[in-house]
Length: 259
Image (tube, rainbow, N blue to C red; front, side, top):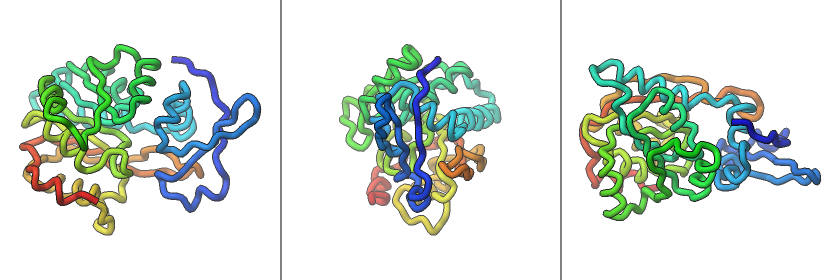
C-alpha cells in the first residue's frame, strides 16, 4: 500500500536523555508547523495514514513482526504440527503489521485486539479484511462475557510484538491473554533485552522471567536480535521468544506483578 510521505523531524540533543517510551518526533505540516508526538502516543500516530510505517519501519528499520513470526514458525516446526493450523490471538495488534506477517504464512484464524479504538480504525483503513475479527478490549478489565467470547474462537496461539514492558500491555493483560489460549498452544512475543536483567525489578520484568522458567511455559526458541534503530542510529536489541503453553497461570500469580 502506498502512503503519502510525511515530513518528519527527530530532535537532535534532548532525546539522548529520554527513556525509550518517552522519545518523540515532530511531524511538519503544510504550513511548516511542527506537531510533537511521542513514540508511544499510538492513538495520535494511527490517525495519520502511513505515519507509523514511515517512522518505525522506513526510518528506524523495525523488523520485529517478521522476526517473531519466524521464531514462532521455527518452534512449531520442531513438532509434528502445522503452522497453518494456528488460530492466533494478536494482542496489541495496532494497524495489523504483525497480522500481515502471520497471514503470509497462512494461519488458520487471526483475531486482533487492541486497547485503543484508533488502532481498529487504522486497521480498517490500512488493512481491511486482514483479521477474522478485531476487538477493542481492555485485558486488565475483561468481563466474563468478553472472556468467553475470546475463548469461543478456540485460540491456540498468542502473539504480541513491540508492546510489552512499557505499560502498553501490563502483566495482568498479558497473563489474561495467556490463559485464553488453549493448553499446548503457542506463545510468541518480543521484549527489550534489559527486561531479562535481574537488575530490572518492575512487575513486568519479574513476570516474564518467572514465566520463562515456570511449569506453565516451555521455551522452544529464544533469539537476541536488532529490533530497530534509535533516533541516533544506534541498534536497540530485543529478545524474540516462542514457546508452548502447558497450563493456565494461576490467579494468585496476578497479584504478584502489580506495580
